Image (tube, rainbow, N blue to C red; front, top):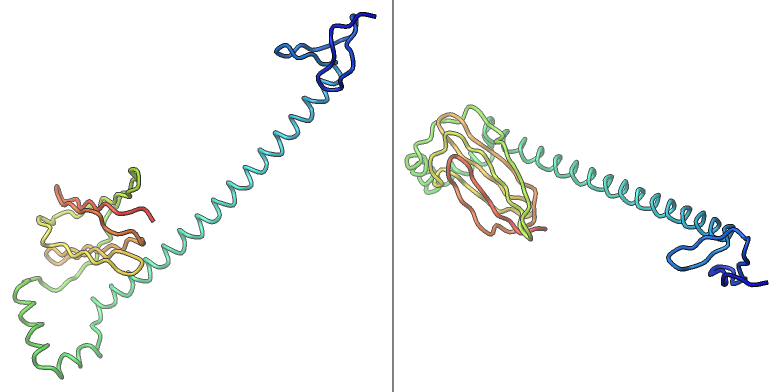
Amino acid sequence: MESRGNCILCGKPIYYGEKYVNDSGNLYHLSCYLKLKEKFDATRLEEKAKLEKIKEEEKAKLKIIEKEKEAEQEKLYEVFKASIEKPNLETKTLKEETEEEEKAVEEEKQKSLIPPTKEVIDPQIQTKEEGDKKIFMISLPDIKSENEIEIKELYKSIEIKARVGDKVYFQIIPTQGKILSKKFENSTLTLELEKE
């Protein structure tokens, strides 16, 4: 009996009158094609499930990292707030013991002419990524000059502090990236950092 050709899957001939599938020139017995499709669908579902599991694991890891960063920032903020509201008695005693240090502190106060701080403000901050850089935009209303802003690069974070009147803006950015550039205009401090 003459055949149409051989089934790509099982290798057996497909005779006229038998049900078959022609997929881009490849011939299959209908039963072989359905088995192949079922196997392909099962594999695809399995791969999809694996990808979903990986995504969930990554989300869980990111949440843990964010919580750790928030905890570190909150801790540093509380330490800073406490240092403003309740001066360190041990540090004060050391200053009193050293006349030169006390004089230097007084001179610094005269230079800055900043009144005692009454209110600590957590400034608004926006972030975005561009290539291998991470950009932070910190809003500092009422700050007129970059000279009024202190930026300190710490071990695993960057500290930003700015005083105006009886207010102080304070922000800790948890990061290990180095500062590539900084710019201050329209009451906004823009920092470009290396990606971690």
